[in-house]
Every structure is written in C-alpha cells, then in structure tokens.
Image (tube, rainbow, N blue to C red; front, side):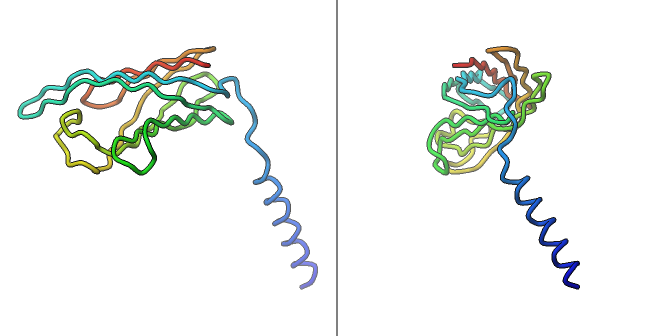
Length: 143
C-alpha cells in the first residue's frame, strides 16, 4: 500500500509540474490591435446601426484575447480563442448589449450574446469575418 501511495504522489507531482509550465511561445505571440467594423443590418422588422470598435489584444501561447469595454458590464466585447500554427483561427466573441439599436433583433440592455469569427493571421497582420447573418469585418495588426 505504501508503494501505491508513493507512486500516486509521484504522478501527482509530475502532473502539477507539467501544469505549472508556461505555454510555449508561438509565431503570433505578442501585442495586437483589433479593428472591428460591423455594417448596418436590415431585415424584415429589424434594423441595426453600423459601428466600429478598436481595442488592444494579446496572443500568449498561441491563444488570442482582446477586450473592448469593461468585463462584466454592458458594452463589453471579448474576442478569444486559439490560433493554429498555420495562422487559421476560429475565434469567439462574447459580449453584453449596451445599445440595442446597434444589435440584431433589438435585444434588451444587459443581454449576453456571442458569435464566431473565422480569422487568418500571417506575419504581423490578420483578417477575420463574423460567422452568421450580420457582416462584421476584423483587422488585426501586431503592435
């Protein structure tokens, strides 16, 4: 029994040591700037005004994260997700509605929303496009 406990303790130490290691650096790691432009959206009984946001982002260990606004507050947009070695990325934007006239379906203030962004990075730049009914274009520039 003592041998089993020692082996289990050793395995736990190895696992904890591996978990504490920082993520390896990737070609896209560093500081980035996001420019997000959403075109007007018009459908039967639904009009959403156009808007543009610019905000900082970082890539660490190949994981992209950029935040516009204050986390947890209406108006926030958090764009995040992994970037593959070839530069392709399927990012997710999570947000909270602040101004319904700029959102599809005129949702109430404070309502959470999310959507996917297909993106591609190469060198010091990248582009992306919202997946879904509203056209939103993303530009990424390394700082």
